[in-house]
Amino acid sequence: MRYPKFTLPDLLAATAVKSSRKTALVYFGTEISYAQLEDHVNRFAAGLQALGLKRGDRVALMMANCPQFVIAYFGVLRAGGIVTATSSMYTAREAAHQWNDAGAVMVVADRKLQPVLEAARPQLTTVRRIVLTGMREYFPRHFRQLCGALKKTSSVRVSAEAKQPMDWLDLLRLARKPRPHGLKQSDIACLQYTGGTTGTSKGAMLTHANLVINACQANAWLMAGLSVDHVTTVAALPMFHIYAMTCVMIATIELGGRIIILPRFELKAALNLIRKYRPTIYHGVPTMYVAFNNAPNVKRYGFHSLRVCMSGGAPLPVEVRQKFEALTGGKLVEGYGLTETSPVTHVNPPAGLCKTGSMGLTIADTEARMMDLENGTREMPLGEVGEIVIRGPQVMKGYWNKPEETALVLRDGWLYTGDIAKKDADGYYYIVDRKKDMIIAGGYNIYPREVEEVLFECPKVKEAGVVGVPDEYRGETVKAFVVLKAGVKATVEEIVAFCRERLAAYKVPRQVVFIDALPRSGVGKYLRRELRNL
Image: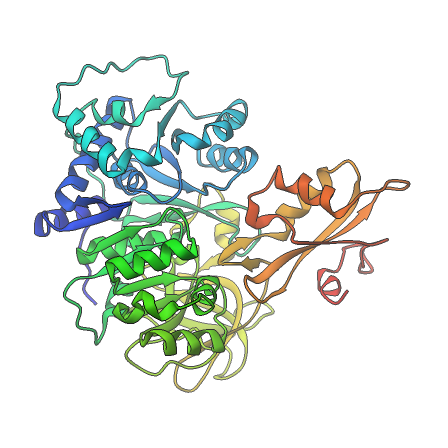
């Protein structure tokens, strides 16, 4: 394929020129054109520069899906900064770890999350500014007021004192046009945090080229054979996650399409949006399609507008795909990718053969091999299992400030994924197992070690082991095995409550079992695989 020689801000600017009057974002009835989006991105970028943001500075975004996320994302990049997107479900502890590791100098967050920010603030070592916004600021009436305020002469002053958070509107009123900064495609655009293949949280360095190219790759693959005059997607997946960031936000903008923003997936709200806006493409995780399949009177919501639906984040059960396609008449295809690959590497072809249980074929300009599980130096014969390694223009630059871990996974241009897979004679790939013990629940990656560390902090807990167990709805769920200290009693509810205070909701154990001792190997390491059989 030929790819545009754009940075991400260039990509938006080109679309804004071609499609200035077209609707870019829809949010609770507010329609924001590409011209308006471009204006707000410019103002946000200029405001950040007025606050002292320099090229290469990291800015954290922490909010649910909303227009401000899109504006801030492209605004940070246009100002010359680097984005680190943070889960809006994170606790103060989790957020502080990410921001300190990234060296974030600013945080842009939903005003509702201010208690989390205040709790994290004493732990922050680099953050100098906090900008707060409210989800209602882009509701129809408030959006008109905001646009009116931006037309007035600004009287906002930039104070050197940054103890108090700054308001979103005040930031937009600081300046209108950002200064040029000379960004290149090879520059880092995002530090996207992931446990990767080693289970410890680290920032994957994704360049402008990685993300622009992967959006183009995904579009070319999913749109092949489809005749769609205007693309409409639904942002129900969180845009702070790499899947929605690339496949929904960036890819739709590359096509000049319309993004219908849902703050979070709620079945009734998603159904109503589908009925009202008639989307052509939908990106989701298996739990969403399970919910659609089981919704009462689902056919009345007009799913027939969907030309192709994509499922990622977790294995898609065959019966879920078959039932969804029968209900909608659309095509539901499964794909594969990682944060380290921006993320898409494999997809079943919407206009071709979709193989049951397969993650599909490699997309354009992407290579994959099966390497031996011992040391990863010998390519496995066709049909035999091995660790899947990937090479392509969407593969990350490396892990932020972690050269040793980068060297473990990037070897001679190939990314070692840590996933065990096999390839059939037709070139379709199948995930067999995971080399590591990552849990995927409802499309979210959960690392057992992180949950275990929180359990170990509980005063009543002596030891703990965490595994993923099958779950009909979420794909997998978190199960904790807990050894209590001698003479101590505890309830399941106590353990869960302790975790809930320290972990995002999707990481909290859904099952807790009290045992006398963890199974261990001869050298004293506990055996996670044996816990799965208990």
